[in-house]
Length: 597
Image (cartoon, rainbow, N blue to C red):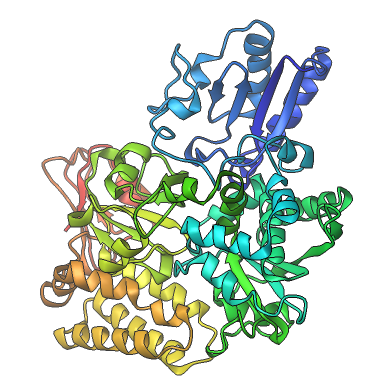
């Protein structure tokens, strides 16, 4: 029996910041002191506090350490684990300062308005130990459905829960399962998991796979029983090596324990799962393209109908849900449909996981009840915007979504509300932007991504998005006209109506939403030849304020093209014909004398 457990985040973010080195140092230090039989070191998944990583939590003391470095390990062991005195300078609180008072994580501003269902085990269990998952009621839901429920009863519970797909469109999960449930035992069927998370800034599914892989396996087996499938495939991008390794480990463990394979729970039900690695194509997040890729072909979307529930993988009935959708299933089975439906809004039940990023203090992973306002997410959970800047917009849904302006800051977040204002839930990326963001540049950024990732199969997406990008380039370079804005909008609606797949149809959304709410910025670029946020390089120049310049010469010495001249202790000047707008002078100046005009 251990007297103490030290949980170390083993997610991708913290691992890249040497959390595994911290874990090895901890184990070594404890062994050298003869404490390895008293204190357990546990590798976990993501805690969600990505901005504070690496994270280390000591139980039962409820002490959370943030931004831990390998060189801090000896002090933590000596002071806290041996002498019982927490290391104050490393203790987490919302202001990133160590305090004498320690708080339980769930009591902090970051956590107290969250509700963790999909993330319930992340940061709590060792994802590579099936027994820790089982200790947290793991595989109980699978046992329940196989021994006490009919397949139709399982589908009805999912229908009654109101769970909608967390991968983008928000289609009712139970309805999708019901469509594929006919002819059980007569035809081959498949259960697929979309873990090909491609949105810029999104890492929700990756974190679930890294922190709780067994929940996906259990849910897929439940889905297989419900529709009458015996084989499942998880399509995960190869750029997620930690997730891939933990999934493979989990599959092997589940097979060893008889929770995958033949005659699960002596029920006569057979179900197994295999991994398929994607090569990073964004289009393979679209369901028919994903299935085409699993089959070994180039990942391109197929026309619908027929829909996958009728003719999907290998031309057989198939259901496809994403990681977060599956992560909700076991808890719905165990706690009941009413429990899940009691959370959220009338048409959007349960919770939603978001990868919170951009201009915000608490970047990381959050899970909130549907209906939570954007203001609550940004100001309370996210800790507000750095440097006292004002909130300008938030992008949800990645390249397929849209920008939510400040006028909708208090909108409750759910599927229908976001669609009504020109955005969408998407898989769950939420990028916050402040007053220094150029919305025309943001639209161009997402469109560049879409152009690069287009599979090229249909003309509206292959050609139309490139034409849109050319117009945006023209506008941000100061060469645009009012006719260009009209043509950009016309093209956007045409592509939206005529592209083959959902990704092509939603590609214009960032442009349309910024035109809807920030058209004045487009006009300023075109008419005034100015970028209000001073981001587009062709539309501003660097100048030096003579009243602030002390003539220290640091800017002149730091300029790589010798565009700055002036005598020592005298105001300097910038030759705008030479300036390459590299921002080096701004970084050098200690007096705030250099500005954009």
